[in-house]
Length: 280
Ligand code: AMP
Image (cartoon, rainbow, N blue to C red; front, side, top):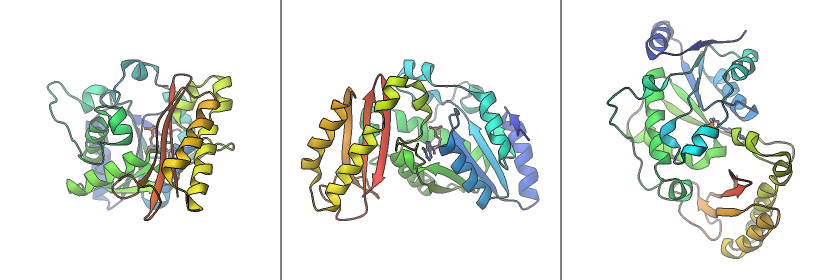
């Protein structure tokens, strides 16, 4: 059955209040829509862990630092709702902008440190937008657990920190990255790639896997990065924004994986910004 689409926080709150009164737990999967198997894996995790499941779809203007990017972002609400029909989803919450940012809205949630690097350094204001909307979605849904993908590893660290710092009642749960068969991390932005660009896109992950192998064999990131960048650019990517080995907990730069570490990258292909990360 296609789940109900709820568009106001009043209606959302009324339904959640009934669930809570019945002692049921609530899981939320925050998304910007254009749902793919990556999103659906989060929905499955929510189904497994919670009595009730809410999927939110909100293309959050505050987390886009580029108006063109916001305009081009894929919007496929009807198909999204259909995809959720095969899951135990109780509600799709698709708030209008005024439900999230009513007139006079003046508050920003800002996480320092973790947001200064990687995507934070290249997309000014992005993580403030994410932290602000996620806080609102947590408080509006009163979710016990929220499911986020490791695909956006820095975002996962930021919302985990934020939920802990603000004593939010929602536990953040991280879930593994789902990939296409050729290794490309699934992303709503992949829809924006031309057929030609789509063929080149997996090279990002390939180069990262090779670099990770080099690191595991004792190599150093500053050396291995040179070859990896070359490979990515030779495939037709126009820019590698970053390709860093970083500590999982505080995202500090590492040259060798002396503690739990992640290789993280952002690169541009045919006008589309792709990100990926893998454990080392
Ligand atoms: P988005 O709609 O891109 O804002 O993503 C919504 C949620 O889905 C975020 O928690 C993402 O990390 C997660 N997500 C996106 N792509 C994937 C993927 N390939 N595998 C797992 N989770 C993903």
